[in-house]
Image 1: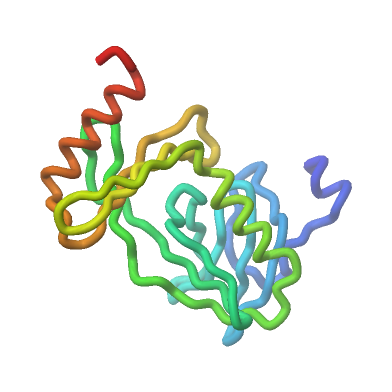
Image 2: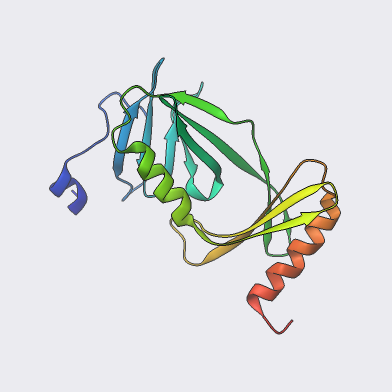
Amino acid sequence: MGLFKRLFGNRLPDDFGGELAAGEDALATAPVTGGGYLVVTSLGLWVPSEDGPRRIGWHLISKAVWGENALTVTEADETGQAGDAVLLTDRVPVRYGVEEPGKLPPMVRQRVDGSIRGRHRQELPGGVAWFLRRKVPGTDGTVLQVRADPGVDAALVASIAEDAAKKLVDPEA
């Protein structure tokens, strides 16, 4: 039994249904209106889905907003590579109704913000691209992620992302 569980007990509901990884402990949970749970762990946010609970890594949460008894999560998909940079595309935000959030909202905010090591907003023709250096849970180091608005030239974003990733590795490049 891990030290966390010995000190604080298991915060995972008995009927959760998901499989946490070795060493992954539930830090906060909240029941979702309509069934299932939101569960904060060191590796990500577990959310209910049609196929059962699934974890979204902190590095793939573009936005999480708490308001009106709900957590609205915008998840990103890794849709490509540009050199060592990862290109992201946001999914449609999903709203999870939560009547008793407890510590969940501030813990989600802390984890999402804590995964970001650096950010840059770049105005481009057609919109904006965000360049984020993020920590990937369970790994060493960071990854450069790039998320552009719909309508921004994908080839231009990929070119800039590839150059930016090279400069992170070798600032003299």
